[in-house]
Image (cartoon, rainbow, N blue to C red):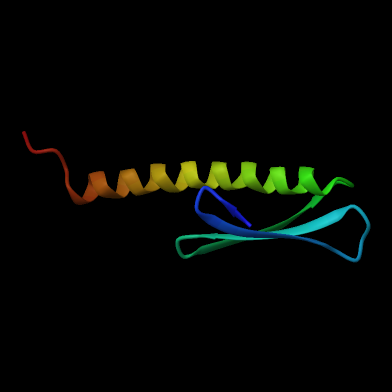
Length: 73
């Protein structure tokens, strides 16, 4: 599946109601589990996690660029 350009997977585990997920942003791979009986809710939770990680990644990238090119004045 794809959310905002990030490929991710969500899969059932052997434990009923537990879903395993994984996605990669840049060089960093994130994995985890979520508990729900509803597959669409598991997917939505991963999408929300991707949104948070993208926001953090962009903020960190912006700080890196400021350090590399400090304002000249």
